[in-house]
Length: 437
Ligand code: NAD
Ligand code: IPM
Ligand code: MN
Image (cartoon, rainbow, N blue to C red; front, side, top):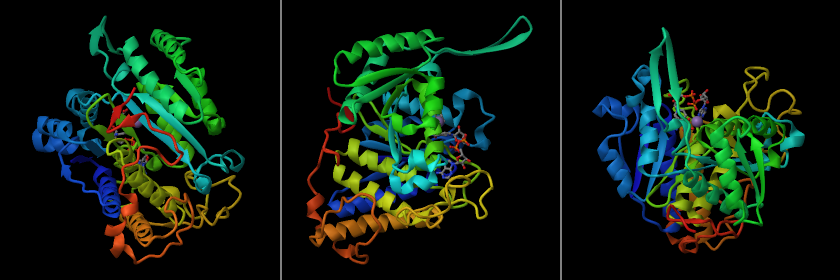
């Protein structure tokens, strides 16, 4: 069973499309999935008085995986911190022990025009994986607000134990080993004692991974260099707060937060899959939210928690192929250009070009229409495979395969075997949402 927690604002809008994509991938590969929707966040506060009702956490514990939208919004902003929607998020991450938050920041070459960075930096795309600590640090340390000597004071304690750092470092080293073998550990060791512990532990773990090239970097410089040239990074390992900020910066680099997915995994139990973005109250209810990050999170769910690389690949290919021809409003620049400095404006050397996939040529679509196109692309792939067609995994290409043959998807037996290797041929260090060491 997959627990579905749509949450607030655009959460339900994008989660609906993610569920649709999973259902299409299941139909195409002959898998059976069950979904159970549960109250969470502001909606749960309205219904039950708390953001994470016990029944929701219990149902999540029983599930294979948790698919989440986003929580929060102005309606609940004045509530005390203990009962805010965001506290529910911290509660479920802690409750399920999902300490490793994987946030891929990926821009395929065909999408380069959505990035606000110069063509010469992004024409070849980039692929950075932020590995963020998720159940420690400032978010979970003691918090206090009080009055002292006539002045108000407040504090949030940042604390880490060596084992907390070590388990996350091992995840990051294993992932780096499975990719390019480069790892950047990001901290603020010139100021923070937690960062000095972080660095010592990461250095100690490094001796088990002599093939991984480790560098340490201060977080301020990391932000600077990510913008200067994202291609220089592969895997970034960092603590909770730094990872939160750097991953939103990654959203800026690819052109919209709406494109970024995430997976949060622990040493057992279900993983949590959610887009990196929030509930976006400024656009909620208008049908314009970009569901790509949520749908790509569903692909990560299939990969890590279901062990179904075949379903994950189908969903990811469908998203990237759809983006080549149709894009939600956040990725389509305002007519006339200057506007708010959105993607592909200014110095991007004109609109379009590049495989016909330029931002200027992709048509704007609603959340729901984007979801329909992704669904159709998945079903088409299944029909193609069922009909004995050529390989379905051919990356980002124009959608040329026949439409209207979705009726034969049930026969797509080619995809039926669970696969634990991904398309690059390496073994992920997790299976069924659990890290394997
Ligand atoms: P946000 O991520 O919701 O929005 C930031 C900006 O990005 C907004 O302009 C928004 O319109 C845009 N945006 C975000 N996702 C988009 C999408 N899918 N398609 C198109 N545009 C998109 O961040 P915020 O405005 O700082 O926070 C809003 C609320 O969300 C707050 O209550 C915050 O606490 C909460 N939040 C929740 C989560 C979560 O549940 N995981 C994450 C971040 C923020
Ligand atoms: C995120 C969000 C959350 C975080 C907030 C809403 C608690 O910003 O998932 O990135 O900081 O982890
Ligand atoms: Mn965030």
